Image (cartoon, rainbow, N blue to C red; front, side, top):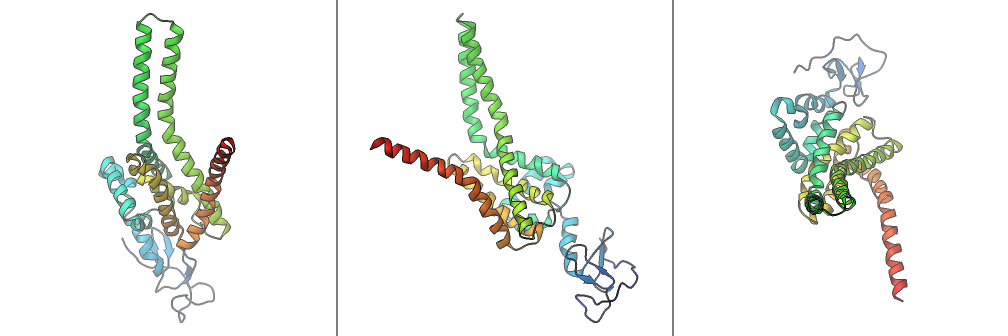
Length: 275
């Protein structure tokens, strides 16, 4: 990849932000700093300053492995991406292209949500097998056809729940990410757009594998996702981790508050009933 200055004419009156003695010839497409011929570089026809060159060069040279799954294989791409988002999230979100490929990120996030809810789906599958077996036995025993239809209907309902659970979990995380992006915009961050924040949320769901662990995984995974959202939004939007955390915490509190209030009401009602 070449980092050669663009042959641009001398720009308007002013001086380069990095070289005060040189007249400016353009503006960095990433940070907006004034550039001169000495520090201005071109990546695929877009001008960047010298400081932003390395970051964007890494974006172009080393994208998220999942976005190269057609070249390296789906399982290998999933495995590499999951290892990176679990052990080296700073590198993954630095390499992530801020724009485009949202469909790839969504497919990866759905896999993570499926793994996260795998324990619940296993129990549902056992219930489905048991209920369908009972339904078949009732039908073969010559009992009322209505009874058999009710039992089979319950089994089909559980199958539908198995399919819908990962989708519902995924949609809930996307709603949280969208609310965080709105908060980022209110504090002057998130300039790369909602697409970038949603990509961060999808790749952060790569830690869904921990949901395989019964009881423990269901508690730890959302906390881990929250930490990755702070790291990812800070890297992808080039804002401070403090700003990313400050915009996410109120969103989580707003979502948790109704649940906490509901639990408090139940506890109070139980105490009153005992008195």
